[in-house]
Length: 497
Image 1 (spheres, rainbow, N blue to C red):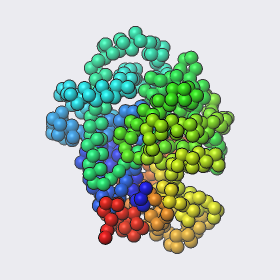
Image 2 (cartoon, one colour):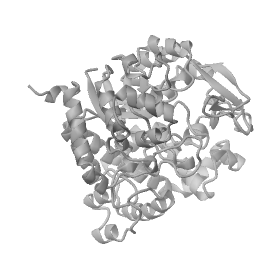
Image 3 (cartoon, rainbow, N blue to C red):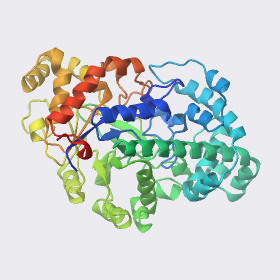
């Protein structure tokens, strides 16, 4: 990879008139902004339909798209909605996502669009091509919606355990609603494909994200229970998490079902191959979340209140990546190798040849060997000031102890007022081939603009960027363009003479 740069901004955070960012006009404007800033990449979180806690890392499907992102304006342009219907959408907050209201109001619009939708050759082809996941996902959504959103492992036995007669009855009597969810997926995929094509035309590639785990309440777990550590009633035997560490005395209990890796290996990792292939149809590069889980993972007995009592269990290791490459060839991957990283995890990443991440907010603990320090970053790394799980750099610095603040300012040779800009500049200057900066850090926003606080149940994933913020931050976006040129990160096809 040539030296290059990009900006992290999840699509839900884009400005729009419909309570959440979408794939309409402002998404195209955002890509044009990236081009004007001489960026090469746009990084996003997973694009699936969100479930528990509205987290894109707890999706209802590893294959479906987040239909909240469907643009009503583009539906109107397709003749499926009218201008009065668009204009009647209530005024929701421009600064945060109210997921419940967005769900309710967009559902009303989408149902109107669906009533006007007629089957087309493209829709039929989509349903046939995506049948391997779409049929189960649409059925799962219909059942889930009919019983007050209960998780599938709380459904009545015939539906939970997928008795053919029970599923056949739902298919027979809920055909129209099943088709509705296929329609929504079709519209998401059409709108995203158009946006991706525009991005490519502007010289912008998209970095996506694949969480190592799937949500317990997901179409994946319901439709393929043999892949997971479930008992005879499809309840988890062990679940995911991370053990106690410096940041948490009780660890983090994520609660995702664990894979039966031996069974997946016998199947040639076919489900994973389909998952990665599908994601690469949506994005250009994949960030593998929680990479260390492929080397070994923390398994917690189901029902525990925290992650204290667990054990490290070997993951699939290099065999997994050899199978993936054998099926799909060399892949554009980034390893999220943060957290409790052992020599074995480092060895696996090096064996795969996948670049790892370095986060500058983790660098200034006073240890000269800290591998996040800018002078320890190597070209094969991807460098960030922070990620979606971190505080904004402004908020991070404000909350540091005085001695660590001093370490940062001495390293950056700056005063408190200049720390954010200096850290962004430093990220651009590192040897890392790729530099990604969250938009909040470019705009120097404080902690109130944080995207996610791990371990916090409510209030995450809601942050939105407003048009006012972008207008007020134009000088900072210009600064990024200058850094891109100064530190040799111009797009190859647009390099200055």
